[in-house]
Length: 429
Image (tube, rainbow, N blue to C red; front, side, top):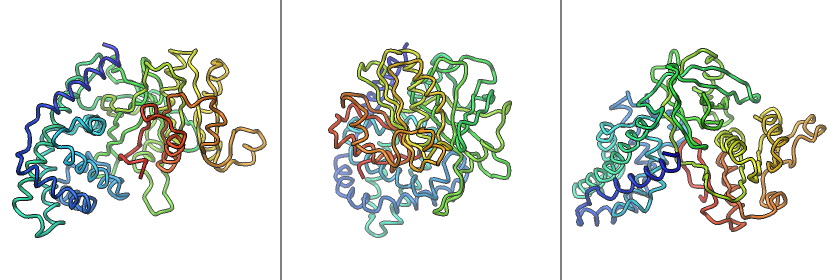
């Protein structure tokens, strides 16, 4: 079965899983609908309280959740948006299939299991009661308890399908599997690539360019295991997986440095073992499209797009590709030589570079095409037509700017594809 056929089969099985869940009692459905605005208004407060409750009652779940996202507030906001969206579409959750797929893929990669859902439900309902106080009557809480049961049933069914198909595919496996760091390569001052090969020498599971893996890291003197998701930065059908990790240094706003990224950079070396879960993710390269391909990245957001670039360059060398990468300057610019070498041997690949703050050597060597930030005028100036498939990834402000430019250019939604690193967000906010 080809990767596109596999994805189609998964999507159909997910839709069936959503369709066959039990329906909410009509009276309780009306209560949920009537209280949705209040729950949405207090959504972030509820989910912040939920995480505090859950980690106090079940500290072992800190082995699964990204605790940095708790500090930034990304994870509570993501959960609030997911709960509200699911409840708002509880009569027909196929209406939000892209969101369900994204969450289901992430849950499968993190090894979220059916036994986790009652824990989440108990603490989420407790948080709703605490935040809403007397307004959360027994009748309202009973309705939301049933609504949560319906929503969790959807995810459990979807994720069960994912677990089965992931393990059954050639090279697939369940849970986490040990990989050896075969090579460690510095790509820029802040990005390092890790080439991972299965310790048992078995065949690698196939993946679609754009997908990610989850790594499990045990850090000395840290009480809990850390799970992090990194995009695969090279093409499929090789004898390794490659991840390219940005070292997250201490940030001005007082946030701590990236615990896992700094550990990988400073302490993980060739020959070390890293447990990895099978590739996941809903950010896919459309292998059937005949349109020119525009890949737009900012910083380490180039990693999933590098997988797409290498795949298309290998399999469709005649395809027209525009590679647009934004970095602070040459010190932060990863894979520059690789892309230049590809462009030299593929006449249809056209790279363009934007440096926010070029150093003097960059200016003297003319290593970039634009100083500053990406703009619609820049895109119009380098793309002969707007009839392309657009894929982009990078920091949220960068992605919002790209999305706004493409919307202003009236690019059809079906030709705009993007991936968020970390928790999910809304580019139109």
